[in-house]
Length: 160
Image (cartoon, rainbow, N blue to C red; front, side):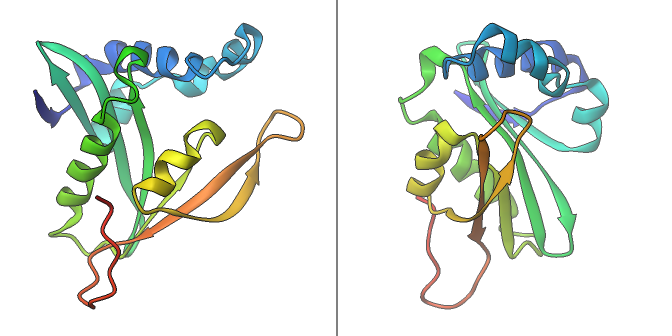
């Protein structure tokens, strides 16, 4: 098992993984089709964002991506795991790897917009809900979540 930086040639594999993982939550095919373009992980995306993939037995089974949105604030943009690997601790492994990569940066806050089905996972690893954002689906909202990082004080909440 290894977590390493993705490269532009991973775009097809990461796109397929993203679509498979999103469909896992039971979204209707019509909805998945509407989201199709937003679920594509392009070569340009991989080249301009920080994207790390989890490889088990030579197969990419998960990944995460992030970018610095503004000074001190990192946006965790994606965390996806192949459906057959969900619930086995790999999501937590990816989050821990992500947080370790932030240790030597000026990041103070991590923000994300969670799929409603993943909200409990993010809460378990230390994120707290700070709001909701409307989606293209009527009466569906994404939880906006936040985690403080790289704080020196004793009340720092670890994500693991």
